[in-house]
Amino acid sequence: MIELREVVKRYGEVVALDGVSLKVEAGEWVSIMGPSGSGKSTMLHLIAGLDTPTSGSILVAGEEVSAMSAEARAEFRRCRVGMVFQQFHLIPYLTALENVMLAQYIHSIPDEDEALLALERVGMAHRARAEAAKLSGGEQQRVAIARALVNDPGIILADEPTGNLDAGNEAVVLELFRELAEEGRTLLVVTHNAEVAGAGDRVVRIHHGRIENG
Amino acid sequence: MLRRLVATSLRHRARLYLPMVLAVALSLALAGTALTVGESFAYIVEEKMEMYGANVILTEVDEVPAGGVAVELRSAELEGSEVVVAVADVEALLAMNPAWLVRGTGDVLAGAEVAERLGIAPGDRVELAGDERVVAVLESGTEFDSYLVVNGTPGEVDMVLLRTEEPERYRGKGVVLEEMLRAKYAFLEGVESLLAQVSAVTLVTALLGALNLARMDAGTRRREFGILRAMGAGRRTLGWLVLSEYLALALLTGAVALVATLVMSSAVLQATAGTAPVMDAGIPLMLVLFSLLSFLVVGAAYLGELRRQEVAEELRGE
Ligand SMILES: Nc1ncnc2c1ncn2[C@@H]1O[C@H](COP(=O)(O)OP(=O)(O)O)[C@@H](O)[C@H]1O
Ligand SMILES: [Mg+2]
Image (cartoon, rainbow over all chains, first blue to last red; front, top):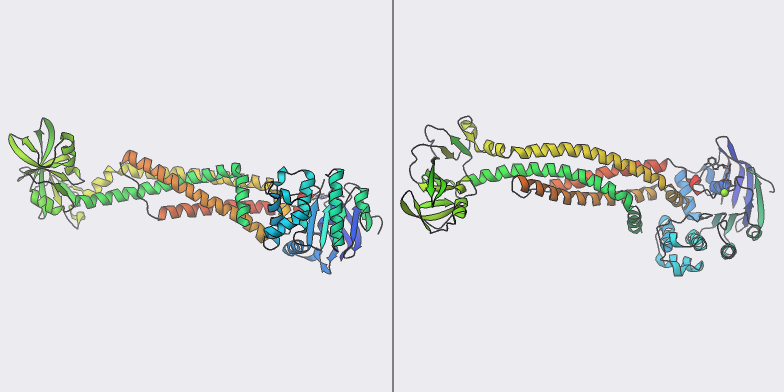
């Protein structure tokens, strides 16, 4: 499903990824752990096609993302990937509902009923009309997950999704991820949290841009 | 959704966009006012030419050209007040100026201004040079409104009203009406060119300011566009978003500029020439076009600034 082959990413002198090879099967939930600055975010961004590797290749469902044009990578993202971030990254002045509908707008056409359903799934329907900036961290992350899944992507890429959440909200998010995994989606979750990492099928450890266990 | 996005974004950034809109709108309005004053000037001259009927006023002539009406201007006393009496062949004068309006019938035509000053109504009797005369009131919209017109043969000709197709022929002999009018309203041309120069300077300043603001804003908006890109927004979607936003700003600016132009040119023309502004469709059209053009430039700079930015960096989780 997802395959990295000898991926190297350099930022000038800094080698963020130093020959990473990794295979993730369809429907698999892989946790990625490693110290800060080890290249975890870089890896997720490359898989999402937000950036391209310096060398090596990345294949997703047989397609070489790393060789696509920027526009093709954008299309790949909107059709197949849902992203979740530690900082939630909602548009602060839009409502929860509008943030979800924005993803629909980018993907195809906004559908308010469907967007509300997605919010209901994450238990946020009652806050649909609230401005994103006025929501608590846990609420914002739930909206962000609704936004990531509203277009029904096969792949969810999450970068420290519980990094800014308290234990209660962490449990809620973890439960949502379990549901997503059960639906057969492929999950790549970067985390520092052992409990979150343990919920996946396997853990990949990364250090100084290299994978320590295949 | 696009409209909702644009509206929310504009409202969210009102404090940034409002100065942009006002600055560009005001400098456009200055240009609009210059054009309106120029156009009104041309209109005033044209309208007066039509009103006067005769398109030439000759002074100091020896003989009255055929088809002209000779007028002698005298000073006299009416009801204890000083008035200018115009002696002329009234029938010929009225025939030459079919647009003139005479209220009532009488031996003497009191110009509307004189009638109002002295409180004379059509049909009143007045004493002029010892004789009692019945007065009619003349509304000509010309200088004759300030005269008392008396029928008679002028002894000494002060001016000749002449309807001619070839004012060129009489140039130098007297004052061509058009020249007279242009001279009288020449200050409007001065106002026009002054405004035009000022507006050129302010427009450049406003545009540079707007460009600067746009680039600053693009910097603060990196995260937002990073998010949209992460969600899979392509260049077209992002372009549309910015374009729509700037299109809305341009239309808003055009509307503000139009209103400001109307207000400013009304003020200038009322204060100086005592007339309302004359504006054809060209001026609003120009205002909107220039506003569109300005914001296209600013929007392009905005997009250019955004393009230079690394997406991934903005979304980094640390
Ligand atoms: N855009 C960039 N420019 C320069 N250096 C970068 C950039 N992005 C990441 N890096 C560097 O690459 C390394 C890996 O970063 P990152 O993938 O964010 O690590 P992690 O997510 O594991 O904390 C770090 O040393 C970081 O400073
Ligand atoms: Mg990171």
